[in-house]
Image (cartoon, rainbow, N blue to C red; front, side, top):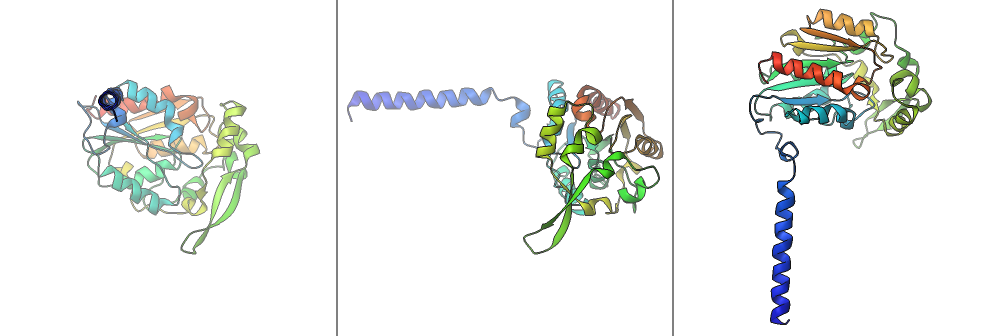
Amino acid sequence: MATSAIFASGVGRLVLGAAVLSALTLVPAHAADDPGRAPGGQKPTVVLVHGAFADGSSWNGVVQRLQQDGYQVIAPPNTLRGLPQDSTYLNSLLKTIKGPVVLVGHSYGGEVISQAASGLDNVKALVYVNAIMPDKGESFAGLSAKFPAAPLTKALRQVPFRNGDGTTGTDLYIQPSKLHATFAQDLSRQQASVMASTQRPIAQSAFTDKLTAAAWRDKPVYVLVGTQDRAINPNLERYEAKRAHARKTVEINSSHVSLISQPQAVTDLIVSAAHDSGHQ
């Protein structure tokens, strides 16, 4: 290869390397942060736990707002395989986070955070969004029986599954034709149709799993009630808030998926929890 060609090739590599370094410097700090790194300043890390039939992207509107306000945010996967597995997984993640944590659960995620946060001093507040909050020794099935069943209970579809080790179980899905009316009536039909196609099932056993601990018994609690919730009876959500002596209960005119339809209201409650816990 001619000397000029070698020189040109070397310059090309230097330019490419500089471009890569430049691009890396443009990545927002929150995107590059290690989950185990303590957040800058006094702001807590906000951990958002999704519920049944969803994934972490259901928090996108809330994540964007919290990040704009300077919060480090983690929206980990909730495997929806049942309370023992899901809460143990979340507990292990929470133990890797340095600094204070505001832990948020939507729907079934409320059960998961209640058990996962037990005994963890870094979790400074619990926020429940259209959530399930059983007590120790209580299941969602037992708790929900105190109130009339929500419309969603008549829209579920059972699908058997088999695991790699040969064990079997039953998954629950929402019937696609009924998802809009029973789960997300304040979203567009197009949004609901996409949700129906991308929904993640929950193991039926999750509804009868009993909590072994309830962190809301000894941590500050904040509750958002969706007054038009058709997946969890709003009166159950109010009962839970009262039983937990919630420091703040907010009621908004939303479906079960308030985190998608009204992300600002959800964000405001999370920020209130962060401020009240002494972390700005």
